[in-house]
Image (cartoon, rainbow, N blue to C red):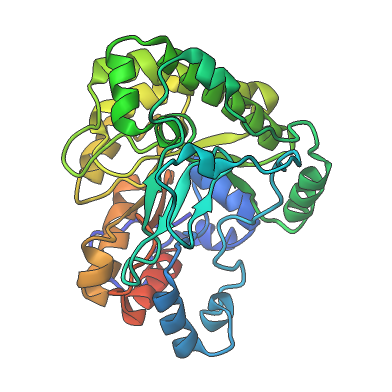
Amino acid sequence: MPGLRNDCNSVGPTEPEWALERKQSMTPRENLRSLYERNGYEWVPADFGACPEVQEKIKQAIGEETLAEYFDWPQGLESFVGTPGVKLVEREEPDWRSYYPGGVADGAWFEPYGVVHEPGSAAAKHMTRMRHPLSSIDSVEQLEAFPWPDWEWDNIDEMAAAVETAHAGGKAVMKGMQQTIWETAWKIRDMTQLMMDMMTNDPKAVWLLDKITDDSCRRAASYARAGADIVSLGDDIGMQDRIMMSEEMYREWLKPRLATVCATIKEANPDTLIHYHSCGYVTPFIQDLIEAGVDILNPVQPECMSFEEIHAEYGDRLSFHGTIGTQTTMPFGTPQDVRDTVFRNLDIAREQGGLLPAPTHILEPEVTWENVKAYILACKEYA
C-alpha cells in the first residue's frame, strides 16, 4: 500500500518495508477493485480521455511507444478494458426526419431514440445542436406510438466471452451507460417540456421516465450478468454552482428510478460496482445517490465542490473517480500544480483508497503534454 506524506512536493512515496514486499502482487483488476472497495491498493491507476489535439501532442512527444511503454509502467495505464455491448435489434430505420417538420441540417446524425445532432462549429468539435423528436406531443398515446428501439437484452454470449478474456488477462471491465434516465428522457422530450410535465404531474412524464428506466434496467442487467466489474450510470443533475432541480423534485422523480436500476444490477451480479457520473455541483444529492445504491461518484469537479469536505462526510461509504480539474489545473496549472493536486487528493483518501484521481472530463486543446506527463508521473510515483 502507498505510504502517506505531508510534503506534496516529495519525489517519491515513503513505504514501510512490508509494503515493498507486496509491490504489484495484485493484478490491475484486483488493484482497482481493492481501491474502489477501500481495502487498500498497491499503485495508483491513471485514467483520462483527450480530444484529438491533445492526443496528437502525446503522439508527437512519445512517438510510436504507448504511454505504458514510455513510462515503463508494467501494469499499463488502462483502468478499464472495453468489451462489446448489448446490440440493437435490427430494424428498418424509422423516418426520423418526419419528427422535425422544419428539416435538419446537413451532416446531422440520429441517436437510436431519434434525437438529432446537428454539427457545431469547427472550434467545438464535440458540441452539437441537439433537437428532440417528442417536444411537441400532447398525449401518452403519442408516446406509445413512437418507434422505440429494442436491444438484444439476453444475447450476452459475446460480451461475456470478452469479459472473461479481460479477466484472464488481469484487467477490469467497466460498461458505460451514462445518460441513464433523466438525460435520455429530456433529450427525447426536451428539457423544458419534461420539467413542466414533472411539475404538473403530467402522465406523459411518468410514462416516459418509466419507459427509459425499464430500458436501462434491462441493459444494466445484461452488463452485470456478463460479469462487468463496474457499470457506469449517470445523469447530469448539477450545474456549475447549483443543482439542476429541487431536492424534492429529484427525490420524487429520479431517485426511486435510479434505485431501481441499481437494485437490478446488484440482483444480477452482487459483485458489480456502480459508478455514477454527474458534472457540476451535486453535493446536496450525494446522500441520495448513496441511498440509491451508488458505489463510486464521478467526477467531483473541484471548481464546484470540495473533495476534502465531501470525503470527510461520505468517504467511509462512497468512493470517487476524478477530482483533477479540467477547467483549471489541467489546462492552466503548472506541472507542479498537477502533481501537488494528485498527491493532495490521494493523501485525503489515505491508505485505504477510495479515489482514482483523474481529470474530471476529456482534456481539451489547452492542456499541454507537460501537464499530461505530470499527471501520469504523479500517479506512478505516489505508490
